[in-house]
Length: 119
Image 1 (cartoon, rainbow, N blue to C red):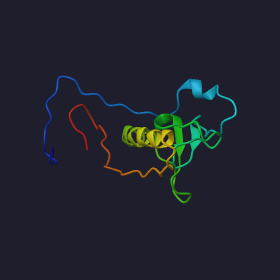
Image 2 (image 1 turned 90 degrees about the vertical axis):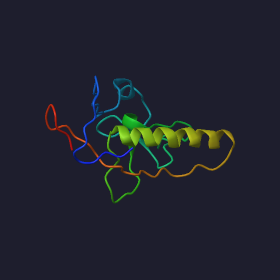
Image 3 (image 1 turned 30 degrees about the vertical axis):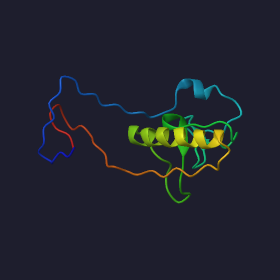
C-alpha cells in the first residue's frame, strides 16, 4: 500500500507509541553490561555481552551494529525487525547452526506535529 504526501487515512483510533528505556525489571538484573538507559548490551547477533545464551531486543537492547555509529534507537521499527530476526536466530541456535548478524533497514520515520498533521 502506498500513500502520497497528501493522503489521508481515516480511522476511529490512531495510536503513536515510543520507547525510551528498558523496563524497570532490567535495572535489577546483576551481572549484565548495560547502558545508561539500563538496556542490555548486545552484539549484532542480539546475544548479550555477558552471556551468549541470553538474547535481548527492542527497548531492552543496546545494539550498536557499527563501532563508528550510534546504537540503534528505541523505536518500534527497530524492535519489529529485531523480533523477526531473533525468531530466526533462535531456530538456528536450536539446530546448532551459526548465528547471523542483524542488519537494520531504516524505512523512515513519522512524527506528529499537531492534531491533524504528520510527516
